[in-house]
Image 1 (cartoon, one colour):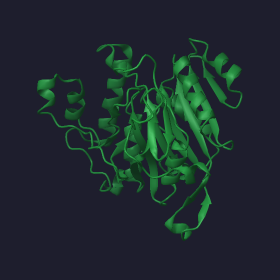
Image 2 (image 1 turned 60 degrees about the vertical axis):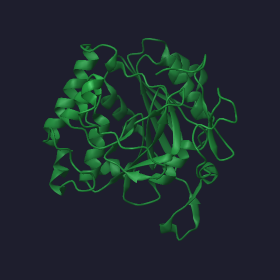
Image 3 (image 1 turned 90 degrees about the vertical axis):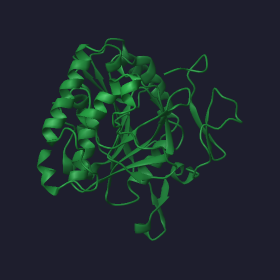
Length: 323
């Protein structure tokens, strides 16, 4: 991530456009989009409701963190200013090494905190939050994100707009406004090699990134930095795979959704800022990188493929037993 300003910016919605607050008001982050004001008012209109507005379902936001106190506090500050009062926030703290629990308790009494003595990993920690979620919609959110007003409500509205949508993800941008490729086909061994390959090899290796778009579309998976999930779909397919310590538990969840007949949708009309950390790229042979590799190995063995990715929407029903 290369910042273009002295401090990270925040996203703001004004007059039909998303802006970075560190930029001039005349410089939009993206072109005009649909006005999310109906979502902010807690109502949406769907075909199944005969065109009549109905209340937007409440959501539980689940965040897990490990050593991200300052970024997490910014994340929670943005949430406090942008979500309805009947939504709940659960933060699972893995091995509190930087005073995260105390900081949350002092500044965010609304937040429910689960503190683990050790780093249990992303999947197990998120499952602790998911097990405590009580709302119709669950939103998995990374601690290094910031959410503009109406953004998460927009995701929830998309999620419940059609009865077969199980997961929805937004467009993610960095603090400097750079697009992050978050809507993807299912990975293969070659697409994973491409992510660490030198430029000369990346030109010939296949990519699982999908092209940017202005329209909602079905995708293989959306990355776990922000996933809105229908709670009934989660009950159907099961929680995150706890044998995957750090990635690709998000891919595994989306593939199990498709196998069970739930759609995974990318909604680029919703934009969220992601101060992406990518800890596995800091050291090639770190313990975290090795655990990530082990998670990838489990994913490919579990779903029985290496080079030919499943086609989303056409996954054999027999795969349902992979939960």
